[in-house]
Image (cartoon, rainbow, N blue to C red; front, side, top):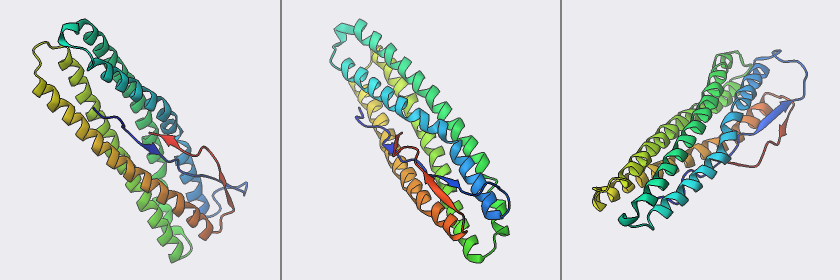
Length: 226
């Protein structure tokens, strides 16, 4: 089965506005909503390390299971149960991750109505480009979440199959191939998500600079795994 699941997800850069007051210009209003939406992603970031740890734990369980023969079904069954428990833990973390991203997206929806109020066409164009990348990033995350949940369902089915003494090797191989295909899709979506995050990290400060906002980057960690 898969050796690597979700690759590293790069954090979006957090900026701090030097001015003490907000809402004096449309650009400052946009800044406030953009940075608040990012702050709401904190829950997403917090789930990444424990998710990776659980993925590695389950991989170890799987690798141990396939060392046993059908004559050692008691050991296989115990490990399969442990694998199912780990999947439940992963699902709980994914739910928290999704709730965080949905809250972030909801806050972000306040940004688009402000674009028409920006002072220049150049600023409006920069804002639209930034918004398009952010929207695609949210959509990619949603697809990533759905495919990941599908992969977990397939893994649950696999652990149930393992404890069935009538299971054939062909059926098991087919199930593992389905799981591997799902994780290949996850890898592709995660790469896209990271690419979009990199674009976000480039376009957002460029927009702030064009809007002449006095902002500074606040470091919040180099990378988070996902």
